Length: 123
Image (cartoon, rainbow, N blue to C red; front, side, top):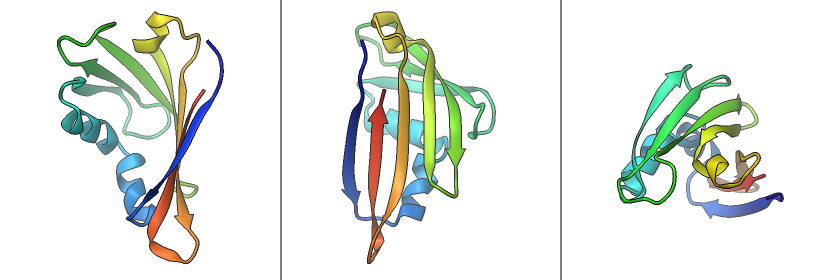
């Protein structure tokens, strides 16, 4: 399977505050907490949350497919507020995808101090 899916959403929080979650390991914990029917937990296998970090995310019991996936953070840029992660094992890679790269970006919204645009894409 090939292609790119991209989406932008407006967030009623500043880009710098939003980035505190998206640009860190906190995002994985938020996902686990927000979707307990889909995710049962995660663990850091290597790194400190920046480029080179590898995490393993575990799916909740009953979720079809592989029990987990591993993701490596390729880019975590606090200045540009961009994070790029690549699945390196399990998950959708076991379901036919050759590659799965997720890019997240927190973009300041002009004239709106306490709002931003979160842009996400999957290739």
